[in-house]
Length: 313
Image 1 (cartoon, rainbow, N blue to C red):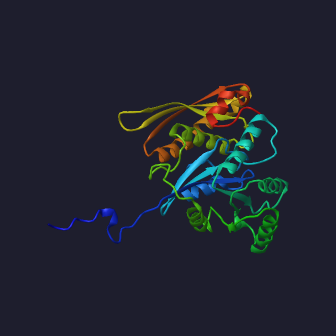
Image 2: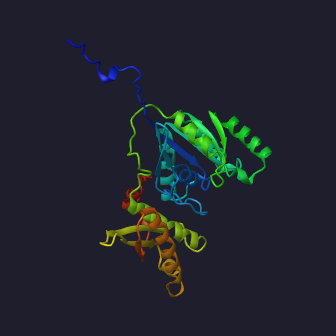
Image 3: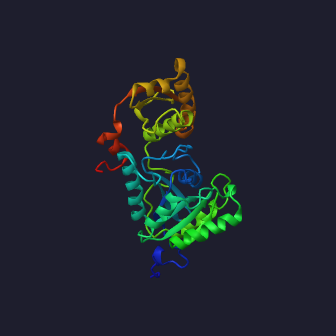
C-alpha cells in the first residue's frame, strides 16, 4: 500500500502570509497639510484641500496598501481654539480619533513653527498614551537649520518615537513615512477590500469636491458656514451620471454672492467641480447646482449627524 500523502499545510517550504492593519490619526492645526498628505499617500484625491482654515469638517479615511499592511489614514479636522458649536464638534472629533488610533501623527507646518496653537496641541498630546510621530510639513519652504531647531523644541515638549521632515508637494520624505506606517501596523485582517481607497461615499465626496471649488473661488467673500449636499445621483443609460447638489448658505445676501453677476460665479464653480467629480467617478458627469438659504444650519443636529460630528456640546 502506498504511503499517505502529507497534507498541503505540512508541505516543506510552505509560506504563511500574515497581514497587518491599523489606523493612523493625522492631527494638527488648520492648514498643517493633513489632507494633502493623505492624498499623496493614497495616490488619489480623497480629501479636499484649500487655503481656507478648517476646510476639513468631517473625518475622512484614506486607505492604502504597503506590502502586507493595510493602513487606514484618518484625516481629522484642524485643532484650534473653538468659538462656535461647529468648531467645538470638530475639535472634539479630532481628539477622539487620536485616542482611538494605533498611531498618532502630529503635523506641524514648518513655516508656522511652535506658535500658540501648536504649543497647546503639544501640551494636550502628552495625555495620549499611544505611539506618536512628529511630521514637519512644507519643509521645502524652510531653511534646514530652522527645521532642526523646530524638531528639537517639539520633541522636548512631547515624546515622539520618530520625527519626519516632509513635503507632500514635492514628495520629499513621503515614502519614508509610508514605510514607517506599514511597519507599525498591528497584525490582523484587512478591514477594507484591496481596491478601496476611501470609506467616504461617492455622493459625499462629490459634495466635498463642490465645496472645495466654492471655497477656492469665494475664499474671502463667503463665510465659513456654507455647505454642500448631494440631493440626487442618477446613472444614465449612456454611462454618464446626473448629479444634483444644493449649496446651503445662512443668509439671502450670501446666496447672491454664490450666484454671482448673471450666474457667472456658480457656473464657474459647477464647471470646475464637474471636471473633478468626473475624474473621481471615472465617468462623464452632468452637474446641476442650486443655492438655498438655510438659516442657522450650524445649529441643526441632523447636519452634524451627516458629517459624523457630535452635536452634544
